[in-house]
Length: 259
Image (cartoon, rainbow, N blue to C red; front, side):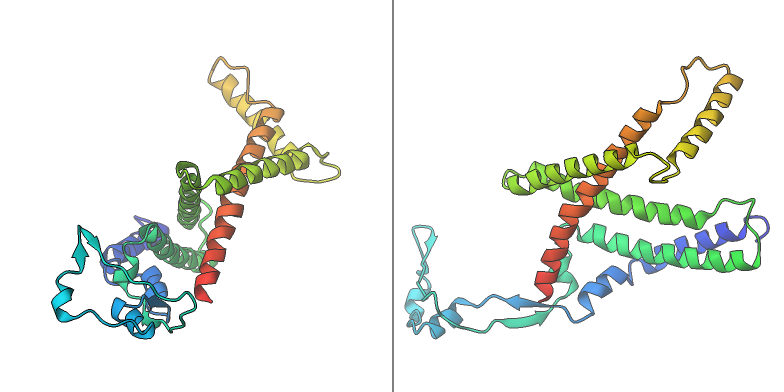
């Protein structure tokens, strides 16, 4: 323990648990397949024929169900009422869905990261770790980064598809709206809206200038404050784009499915 450090030991134990339990137990898989979610089964042709009072095909004609390479069709009334049968969702129903692997890995890793964070905080309450790097923060950072990566890939789908013109336009509009809002907030005087950016930039500028002079690096110094604020605004616009429209759209679809 003293050689490796408590945080590293906790991290190694959790990584070992991921390798051992990952194939047998998954929180994301359990959340989908073991909490009572159901799916509706589509009716068979025989069921539709019976409800629409259409005579069944004779056994002799069943072998001729295809004519000229095309399947025979039959018509049913539009106002035909029937009750769909339900079945519980299993792993075989969701494993082929897009982003299922990313969803499962995100939830599972989030659970393990929460365990690492909890154990680290418990250890921190008894022993000081001031001279060590907090590894639980790294776990949490990986979770946030992976979630942003999934949201970004979901947003990119709107730009790759030719049928998502409306969604693509909405993403672009939301991006420009958040860019404008972020720039408005960043140009407000610190006396009115205290963001702490002025002090942070001054400290960073002073430290970076000292480092550049010490290392004899030829440079004009750190980026100007305007450039820094511009990149912060762009980052806020990207976050607003990937969170607002795709997130709300996916959440609404999920709520509609649960109704």
